[in-house]
Length: 182
Image (cartoon, rainbow, N blue to C red; front, top):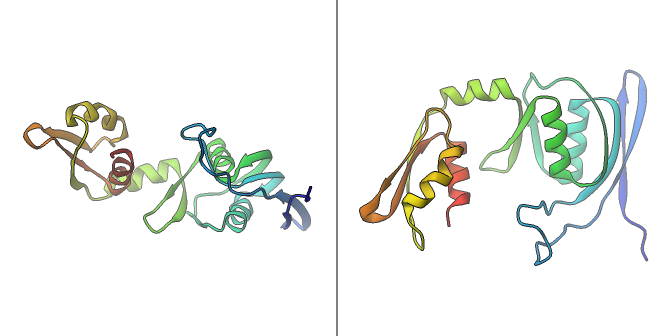
């Protein structure tokens, strides 16, 4: 059996060097034994004690190969022990504990924001209206599934004659609706 591959990460915190070891395991293919909605991202094991969130985000970017950009209000120290978890689940959990949220834009860049700042920004984003022609289902039945995704300014309506959903909301919601619908 081959030993698992990993990498070391050195972070300087207040003059002291903190070393984190990240264990890399291969990407898990989505197969019949995988649970729906279960992450297929590479798994990692890492431990941080009092490390600035910016350094933690850089470690996640280096490990995952993703581009991660944090807003100026994303600050604080992270103390976490992650054991054999998908990197995206570990990142989301660390961010949620600190009151931050990550969103991926259409180019694949992960943006990390304070939840309050994200809500303020979304309140001023333009509303986009898009129609979704539905096949193999009734649009009226899908309307209830889409409603929880909408922001306070969003709306969803049904055109029964063409079995079409009309969704008006910000770009983030439009992307989520497009992923949900067949």
